[in-house]
Image (cartoon, rainbow over all chains, first blue to last red; front, top):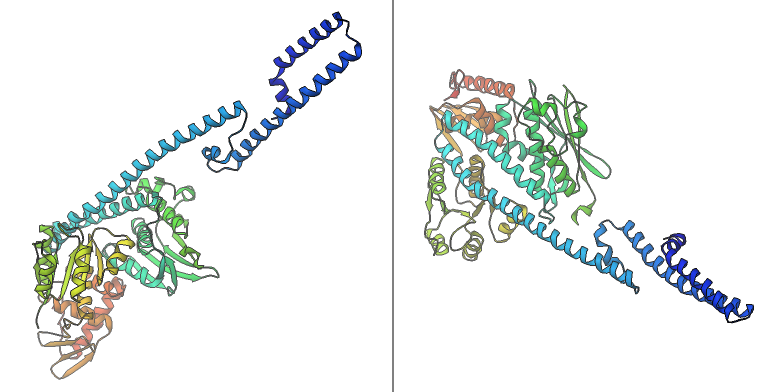
Length: 335
Length: 223
């Protein structure tokens, strides 16, 4: 708040004051007051005015400037009233009270949505867990009645499970609470487990798998990591060419362990590459191959970020895709 | 050999029935318990070799049962649940469960976990020998005998032969063979499998078992 702006706000007041002073001087003249007395009175008046206005100006200036500065420094602007003291001038009080009330009412509103989002999340997760029981039952029935038909049903069920898992982790990725446990894991056994549990689809698609130099330990959550790896693996299978190959290798850098998952599939075009990790982005390949939901890589990135792990995609159209997953070595990920 | 007895604690009737049938085919004796009021006593009374325990149950939940059983017995317990986070797993382990499988389980993995747990707890000895049509294979030292003659088998050859012999008189597809190999972390491709089979045939030929493995074109192999 500049002093000039402050004076401009007071222009009517000053106008009336000048009018009144002129009147006063005229009156004093009428009563034959000495020029000295008039000047003396006017000076005194000015001094008192300057003191009063100056005091008011600096008080307001201090309050509003603190308000503006706090606002700038705040990440969540609605927290402003928490940072300010209630001022001792009326306008300021009104301003402050309005802010506080707005803030409170918004917090209530937000809390309501948070609760309903949380409710919804819990419902979705419960539903996903419930639906796994009939799937497990169907799986066993298929196993007990092997035929061409049940084999096909089994493949469809596998897809259902894949989407279920995506839904589950999507819901988890949005949660505020931390529902993962970071512990020491061996990369090699993690990748072996991944390949074993997806052996059917890999064998059917005639994918050649190779594991090299994976004997490192990393810190991560087993379940989340296996979800991420599975998304990457399924992508490699989905977007394969003839003679598909998937290669897992790791490099031990100074501060980190890097896991590379390389395929020789159709790759991602330069146009799509910067956007593949956006939610719902299917790109040209995704649309051509019909089955893309645009969720896989988005979730991989999001979950990786939450776990404090790096997730990067490199690709050349027609030659293949390479995913780099970076595990930090410091133990700070424990926190 | 006596069959290992597995107790199923699972309230879903269909899963119960199918699991009994499924595990029966792998030569396990199964018994499903349905009285959930006295479930802990019933489990202890049965004297089983292994308990498959669901978590979502009427009356008491699986965690309670797991702890109550563990207080009185060392019977191996595998917890089966649709909840699959690390927290759930940790909780089961803290209550004394030996293993944890999340639904919907891959049936092969279920069987593998059961058999490895039983092996570990020594209630069951693995069949170390398989015989069929005059050929005897020894799983413990990886050899095959026919009459007086004996040959050494590689890890993959032993696995292939044992899978074929366990499914004797049945056609085993190439994909199934590969899957069995993959389950023991041998991620062989199509060509490697062909090479392995051919080498295996030559070895069997050398001990007088020519054409022991029959090829069914487009379907698989059979012994």
